[in-house]
Length: 408
Ligand code: C2E
Ligand code: MG
Ligand code: MG
Image (tube, rainbow, N blue to C red; front, side):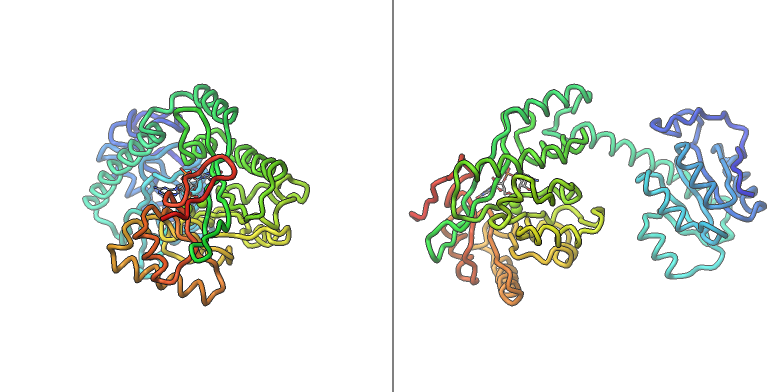
């Protein structure tokens, strides 16, 4: 048992990983996994007769190896198998293939395994014995969905930045290098309205490469080129240089890409920004999940030991869960501007922000409202108990240190 074997007479594939598997072999390539050889053979015959190319595996481990080596359009797997079961196989495959549809089969329906199957991204959950017509129908549909998923992912990859094709890697490298050469940091005041004073500045990256002007595009390009850590370091070193050369008493807020949390240079006591840590608040956005970062809590502890404080950025724009709070235990929360925009005309937004302000007060967390553009938005914030704000009403991001406008 354990070896995989080609169970249909359809043409063998060379297995090039990046091609759409269904292209070369009629209706598509199926990996069928069942520890009972007779069942695997019967299902393979059904699908083979329907025009699919079927490869069978009799245990999870060899199926995982086959899925790593070749592209399949659909994986159909039994759940209960000795060794690696169907759910574990699904998880192993998802580590390197986010798209391939997974159909799980089981002899005895169990609610918890069905729920887990769906959580791990299984497409269908079938109860055995599965009728040939049902198997063919489910697999046919899954192949189409897979093709759709691949096409969508390719389109996304191609048109991510500004709706323009990214072009080849060399071109992106050149544009990214131009962005880095012209990189500078803008600072936007964060103000206390009650005191009419500047409480802090947020550092925001800027560059003169026209196709990578927006910071999220710049960071996405860095991610694709594997140069995220380098970009984060350049930003942090640049902020540190400004603090060395043009000291200012206010706090400085610096955005961190979630991946930067894994960079050892961030926690190095000798790093240029570490020397200013006592005045720096690191912003971690709620938009990106922190789950992929190894041991976030330890990292955050190390940052605090250096003197840094932590802010959750873009509250209300990301995941509904509380994972960022639990991991980060922030000193500061920044409410996303989507919750601020038009707040003076939205009783719902006022109620929400009022609750956030009250909760943060109870927890001893400072709260900053981002993107205040009008006097009415500012006044609505003050009415629900807020005070710290940031937005075009006071100042746009600018060279250090921008003048704050308290005039209105
Ligand atoms: P963010 O950290 O939430 O920054 C606030 C964004 O809102 C900034 O956009 C700022 O220019 C903009 N903004 C401030 N006040 C107003 C306002 O009143 N109205 C409107 N409509 N916008 C306002 P920016 O600079 O384009 O940055 C976008 C995002 O890119 C930032 O969102 C942050 O997540 C990321 N980013 C910017 N600089 C850096 C950086 O140095 N490192 C990292 N990791 N991320 C950065
Ligand atoms: Mg920010
Ligand atoms: Mg924000």
